[in-house]
Image 1 (cartoon, rainbow, N blue to C red):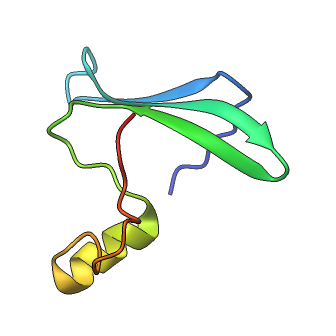
Image 2 (image 1 turned 90 degrees about the horizontal axis):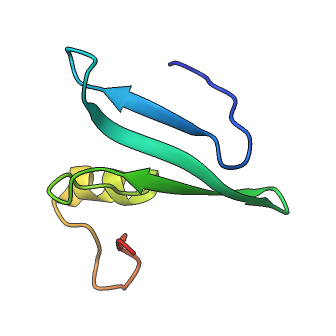
Image 3 (image 1 turned 180 degrees about the vertical axis):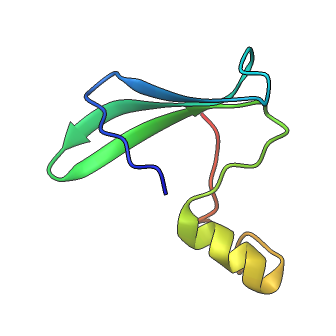
Length: 74
C-alpha cells in the first residue's frame, strides 16, 4: 500500500502505463471534524464506489440491497 499525505486542495494522480495520461485524480476538497471529503476525476465509464459498497458488490453482485446508499456522481 502506498501512503501519501495531502493538504486541502492537493491531489494525487494515478497515471497510465506510459505516464502521460491520468486515469484517476483524487483531490482533498474538505477536512472538517475528523472527516475528509474527496473528489474523484475519472472517465464516467469507470465505476467508483466507497469501500463498503464495493465489498457488497463483490459479495452479491449488486451495489445495494434495495436501499439508496449506492454511490452517485455529482
